[in-house]
Image (cartoon, rainbow, N blue to C red):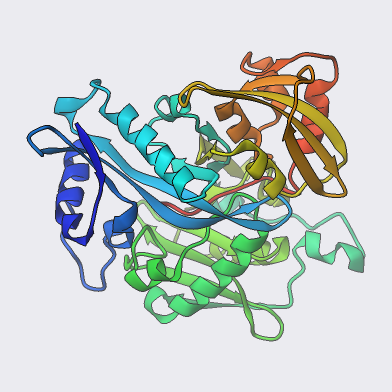
Length: 410
């Protein structure tokens, strides 16, 4: 079997192969673009070929920026379009492609890889761990009244949803530049968020509101008329308003947009497709049960390719030190590192000191953004704490300024 990088001339073969792997057919092109594969970077795609040069597997990577705790932006490879024809599964094709791809990423100098897992059991064995989570919230509109905030005073205004702005309804085609600019401001401050490169917006490649699918956009503007949030939505049967995503630069803007969609006439329920963990919206309803949370699931999976570089890249919010013993079974690697954090910066060097925690590289990926606590994985039996208090210290060290969340589909 041969695994090779692709060129622009391989696009049709690549697209046909990945669709066949999932038992689907390529969509018919529609006016305005919108085909997800138009955003592929062909120099970052791989084809697995038999000895007869028949394509049987695919893998690709996008060039993204990932926001780490501390509002730090770093490059991250967004792995996608991974598939093997049903006739060639369980023959080592996938493992060979994953190993080849990880080696290529390292050759490029990249130290973080991320993906959205089609099946949760597949990617842990390749060193990826679930790192951000999202949920669906369904709100019965007749029960959707927002409570009067109990906190008072000027200092509390941002948290109470006080808003001096306005909301304007536009069609998707009317506000592409607004969406791109507001999303970019949002993702730079949100741990776990990925960039949406300009070419994605220009090609309209992806899911709504990037795609040309018809959507209404509720654009929020501040008191000076500057856009600072939006909600992309559509209405379908049975009388349901579905919000693809709500992008807001602060809680007050989110509340204003939520209030707008919840007040829409001629609908019986509103579905928010992506609600971050621990989001305050549920607590803002006068009836706590008005918002029903379902579909709580993993979203972004993270894989560290260079442990010291990755750990020193992110921001930290307390001082301390840990010795981490990290196994990487897929790549056959092992390392023990002293992580020292002081004044928001980390130093990470090899050490022969006794470990505080022993963990798989996939577990390190899960805790890296602060969305999974190390103590949870200790209790689950995946991470071993070698001394009392080690897990609690790791929880405190790895926390983020807020729950990481990713909306971008790729």
